Length: 534
Image (cartoon, rainbow, N blue to C red; front, top):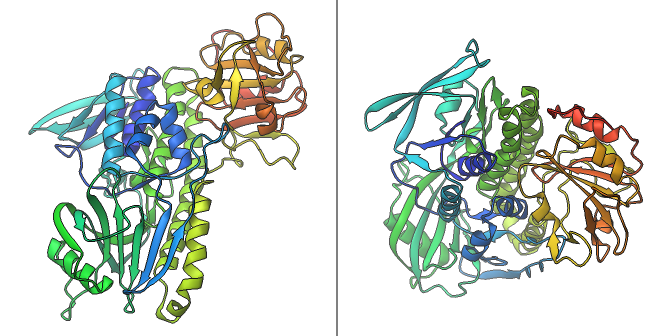
């Protein structure tokens, strides 16, 4: 595998592939790791992914829950909104979005990649690539890389472009990046030291009568703040340079205060409003992920999360195909599952941007509108778990009234691997490259065990039982000590659940036939060196 781009998307994919035993190179044209906060929010679903990759504890230690927003209209304070963090539970260990600068997320993922035996090749850029479908291995990518003026030819089974909004891979493919760019909507984003501002636990949001926006957000465990200031052209129509002087002027004018001091900018960048995406994620042996496939407004904190989730969706599919355990057609489901998510994200991001920058005639009502809007947004982000219910990999044979469906994220919960064993989590059993099969009650366990014979590397099967229940020999029992697993899955006697390697429910059946599991494995083209028999 060749991955171009070492941001959160490329790093997530590299970690996922290497732990699956796939040889992988990840190259980054920048000579050094990026600095600057950029993306700032990790949502619960992304935290679950990072938990699976072994990086979540470090992320949690470096991040904070930001649950307070102080909104100003000029100098006056309109409201001070506090949305208390949701407490972790046995079924939702990561219930809150966390504030953490993108550079910190990348550093933690690089550390995890090193532990897995990989590394980022900085200062290495993709020059060109082509697909050779006539090679003896059935096809390959031939890419040219350049580093320190020296070129190298690389042969790879597949190439993934995770190289950002100005993606070289996307441009070489000739794919349209459809959407819009609003040249009149620009902002300056920077990380600077801030003195004189109280309430270091809050995000501060100012809007002026002229419609200019200023956001100051504290960076966890640092004296630095991220500042976003909308830009405006001067009388001659020229846009200001990205500078500390402009930021100081914007802060003074928009807050009505001269006691807030900005010093030591670590990073400054100008931003233009873009709302764009491709209409295909795959061209033969080449894939796009993250900002290379979709860009949008920073409102809502979707960018880094959507890229991480793109990579996680693609990783397990590439792993199976590259190991010869699934047909290449499985990779087509990457686009069919993730492209609708990107469309929804772009629409929601644009809606949030419009709500945060309302027209002048609405501003007298801001006290009543924005308070409830921000509260709903923060609570809604806790349940920001994209689903794949319409996917061909989701087979739902359950009661349509059930709130949990195939294509939803599988719930977590406490279990014991046998009577008297210590409590563990379902997420711990899901962790890794395999599918997980859960049967409820001991009666179907023997049938399922026969179905997974020869697929031990790909499927781990468990019978979920109440304390004291016995299961047939050769079947692994999962004791559900409090009944939370049965309740979380809406299970009945004989319910069958297949959890995909990315933690989504692939199959949910309350009254499965003997051939149900076998048929589902055929549906997703999983192969075995041994025959699969129900």
